[in-house]
Amino acid sequence: MPRNCDVKSLSAELIERAVWDKFCEVVKNPKLIIEQVQKLHAKKEQSRDTVSESNDSVEKDMKKALGEENRLLEAYREGIISIEQLKAQMAKIQDRKDKLTDKQQLLMQSQQNVIPFSLAKKSIQDYCKIIEKRLNDIKDNFEDKRYLLELAINQIVVEENTLIIKGIVPVDFSEKPNLGSIASTASLW
Image (cartoon, rainbow, N blue to C red; front, side):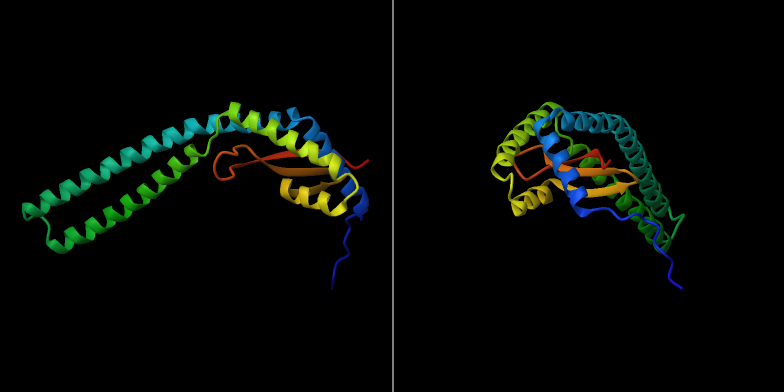
């Protein structure tokens, strides 16, 4: 038996207007975006210490695995273990080393994706200036507004009387788009 939906209905026009108004407010006041990016940078700085500790741990585990390989080879040379035993144990160690290498690469990638805050701040200010100029040109054009919002917003969540708008702002225009995610809220009433 189907259950009834208890969620209140909301006017699409009300939501669209709230999203557009908040978007325009944020674009005209880039400090709002910069504050969010600064918070993200602070979190990344905290996680950088954790990444460094994890990387140290991976390096220690890799050294242990290399030591085990050397001990196994020595045991084989002295005739303590057979070639089959050596192969089986070396395969286990190689599997562990492969996993450690993968983990190390992921840790390195997570550290490479950090853009200096000063560059991010400048890029955000430039981005907002470009978009603010467009806002005046598309004031009454629904399709252009929709297109601009699709580029900048990746998620809208409705929680009771509040919209949570999550957007993407390019923070490095020099090479490939490197995007940072930010969030803003707008009250519906």
